[in-house]
Length: 214
Image (cartoon, rainbow, N blue to C red):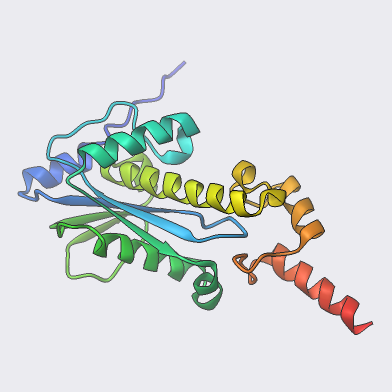
């Protein structure tokens, strides 16, 4: 049986380093799918020739591993930037544009300006050279680092929301439309930081309006 070839997550960075780029920022977002809360992006500039064994796309890591890598990245990175776009803005401009905006904000929040940017499949108009790499979070160490920063930051925001509204169990489902979350949403109704353009929330609001009209 053919074994899966291990991907060198530094191959893209190595090529750019060899071309003379020093400050390479990897950027990714977390939270496109949830019904509630913000979309969050993380931008990370790692030191040249840096490696972090086991780092991968945040979706491939356990929560424990993500938290561990978050702390290591925050300590070791040259710079980390975080961009947050709230649910109201997501409803106004749509989730794709909100993800792009979060990435822009994350890059703007870096303390050092990068000389090259790698994104997970998102084209952003900037005056810095940029590659939008499909499945970039599984191909680039810098983007993988950005994905961990984004995911852990967003999860912690949802845990804070859980403390305010424990009846919704946000700490368990993080706002994603699980069966349990949909049951609780139907029982308690949406909070103000829900995404009202998302189908399950919109359908519930339409149902409530129909009841009022009867």
